[in-house]
Length: 265
Image 1: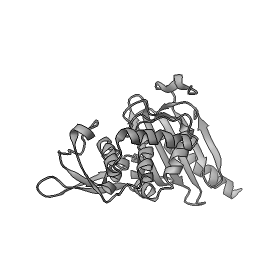
Image 2: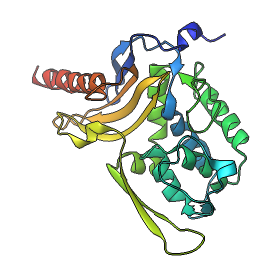
Image 3: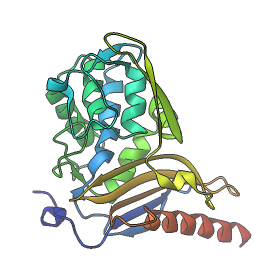
């Protein structure tokens, strides 16, 4: 049985976890063992599994609404629209698009159900015993993990050069080629609003998620510009408010501030 499984229905307080990668020290952990929905952070494992399968990112995939539709068609895809695997990876991780997460499975020529099975197998191989997946995009609240295990998943995801490159971008531009007519370009910003503001820390990579059942979710790697120390910061279940990810921002600032004090001492 899953430890804390009874707490997967939207606990009132968020979970958080901060680890100093260079010192290999956990700097903060609040309710980090509680199992809860992780929303679009699911896409991190989707991307890893498809890259493990040596998916050809130069291959194009055509949108088929009967096979690929998932809430919601924010990019106004039409039947037959084609994107390369690389552009699908961009839209899935930077724009957090659900449809393109499903299309990615076709890049690797793997049935979606097989992708999900491999996602769970990889989670187990990484020792993520509280992590489970039921889809490739994270729309189901049954995609679950803990803040501590998400931090580990994110750390591993960033060892993939293609994923690290994509998650470090503040925006992305992709080309959509229709069945007929001219290709069109779509430009979108990263869903992490912290990238758009000046911070006391440098954000090297991040992935966001949101569901009503999950609240806001964020995993990011930040760097102290003075010491060079890198931290992974994870928050799950942040209440949606303005500004978004305020807890994650405070945690990152505190981690950097503590590191700077340690250097002075």
